[in-house]
Image (tube, rainbow, N blue to C red; front, side, top):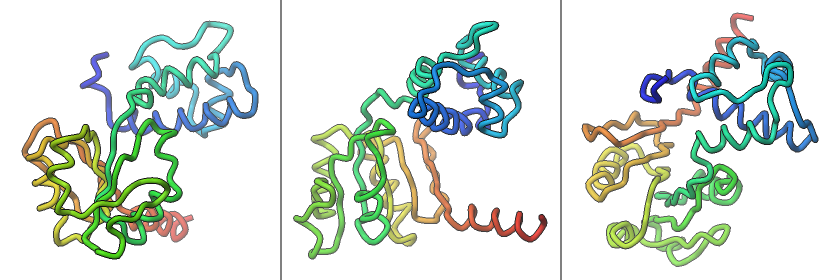
Length: 209
């Protein structure tokens, strides 16, 4: 199957597989069947086999999957070995918390810099990530590889900021602004994060259990 034909649902299950396989490795599990993996993840064995078949043949009949090898293959598909370079714009409460606590390196991202308009944080660092003034952003992007920008900025400037970054060549955005960012540039990718959506989904499930 060509990668462009792989459904979004399959792509969104890949990180779940990677996370579960990482946990299995930590527990010392060497091999696992699709049935057992499905039980661990509450996914049917046929769904797992169907998902994996989009990317090749990973298991062996009668043996199942070698956990570490499968984890490595899924990680490669996800690009965790590509050493993506990332910068953050906005080092308020959320930005600071992400820099301090999120394991970027474990997902294949190196956080090189952060930018903010607040004079009190410019010139400082969080978890060894230097924070620069927004005025330095354009020259920084022109001089460094930037694969992804994390946006934790006010909604009012979110699209304008993204458009500027796209014009500078940035093609990946992890967007926490609670605005659905878009672009007419074909190869720009957004991952728009809405915390309220997750909480409202839980609300629905509680209300309709």
